[in-house]
Image (cartoon, rainbow, N blue to C red):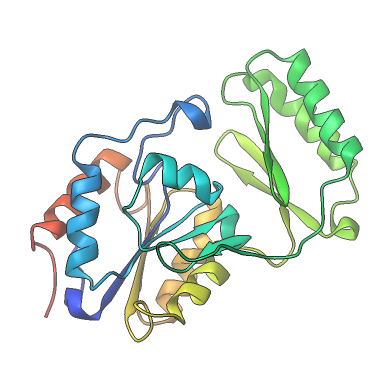
Length: 240
């Protein structure tokens, strides 16, 4: 069992959602929150003096749907939108809009490959091909022709998806923003994720003197990670 090298009184927990707290599903709307997870997270939030956040590629509203009233803070869309505490207004960054013709072309590819889909975000989009692996090559051919950087974006591979994200936005920066505010300020971050996009969060947590883990590098799967979180919520696995 992985041990946290310090006590809950010194820690802050910042967690990815898909593939970390919940199992990856065929599409974003199909995920299921396992029984008992919300209770474990609420116990951890109390143990940590409130310092529990979700740092996700999803919009904040979707986390509110799946984990209502659970996290103290949420960073959505990799930090495009941040809510620092329950009931507080969401901070939305002013960012470039995806060109309409890119959206239309992406949706055309999805239409030609049943099961593929385009997920729209405030400042970006995700081209999903989990349900239609044959769509990957068409999506890659399409996106390779886009002048993404000149439009203020970059392309990021995700799990069975290609994500178009604004330049300068990543989970590491989102973590640093959250850690500068109470109740996270002065604590050591513990970050966990499962995807390429989570590596920035791992690096930022370690640079701050905390810890960062990835599935499957450090935990074989989300179910194992959830069992570890349960143990933490019961007081096991913490250092002094």
